[in-house]
Length: 304
Length: 292
Image 1: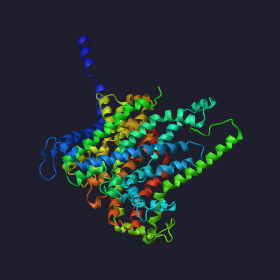
Image 2: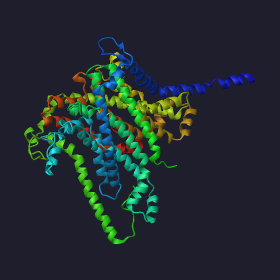
Image 3: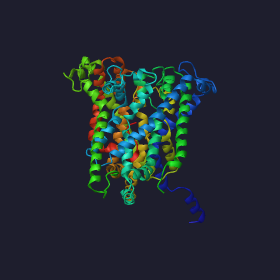
Image 4: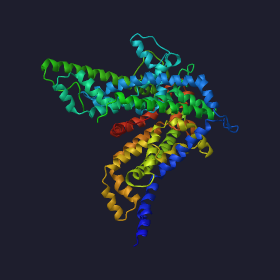
């Protein structure tokens, strides 16, 4: 064999290699096709749409930046952003405190821990549509269970979902019911903290409060951070409860971002404008996520 | 399990008694919180069996005085709940099946085969995790409209045959990594095809992870509301989620019917949870993911 044929052979992949490549593409085909058809193309299409005006009836019309200019001054859209931000900023920290506390409690030497864990987790698996129709009535002024219970301790009945000032707090309250996922993640994390750390601290004379402050919380910061990022992303995309329980009311107090996008798209048929609004939400969510990753360097403790 | 307060202490019986008192207090507190977490669900089930006069009565009764089992008969007459359940079963079964088959295939391609572009596509897969669904909401609708798929179940099923949930692919891939490569290299040399290797050697080994993925995918599709709301118009194609919403609108004053419909939708999921609890909990612990 001459030197040149060897060089040629090593440049061309062998038949065996080609077969392996073919197998690779074959098995990855569902993702590759799906990514192109259901993600990449829709995203490009959505960028194009956001520069157009289209009501599905008359032909699409290129309007340049008009949708984005409209968006900045649109009181309704800005209210949606405000509502979602309000909901997220208040609900998420309290959710984290509740789920972390429950997780801590469930790692103590209690009886029936599995029962508690299952019970706290259950609301997560109840289909959200069903939860929403129930909670809509939990908050009912006259016959709702919440006012009934508040009445036992002498708190006067409230109009909750019909009160402009209480509608968002009612949604926030409902979200505390659905912290099972965060709790289970925290429980798993607490179980991974080496027992020897606590023992060493106990020998050094650290009480349970100090151990908590100097071992448990620092060790858990990666998971706290993780849960926080996920919770913020999810909170910004709340849709089902708002659609079912209030449809954005009263006086748009629960018009959250995604509900507004849905209404623009599927009620008012402003396809281009709805696409522009969803890019706004995209930028906010991605911005939030990136900002948090930067900030996390300061307080999240990652084991070297 | 980590224990914080219950570490061994040397400070004598007084301390031990305090600890025990603390634990008893915690036990009571947890029981109280557990009950409050269960109240909405229990209230729904209880009211679904009440006469409407009993629902609107103060003070509230927990056990219906005269259980109205007929509420459940009525709700199946007021809305075609059986049809919705059937539709849901078909849509969920097909999309879960597609999720499993495609996720296993893609996980196999990413973890066991070398091919050009693998790293790029893997990065793209990770990137999709960060992508909020809502960005593709409008364009997807328009694409499906162009394809003539509106008012069919295709938009609810077909995308899920494309391994579009990165987390499921990760989970399965993680599992594949733990299986020694030699096993399939030997089979390859013996001339076995890759499909046979995957189905006969790898799959039997990863039943637990597939069960976890199946449980999560099932929940996800059973609970799905936004997609059916957008894509499915005709009532005879509705899923349970749309049915619940419609009875909530059409029979808003008949709480017992709304609650009965809700109970019908929730019951199978709770049954599944009780049977397959460990797959739920495992899955969340592994991925930090579940439900929605």
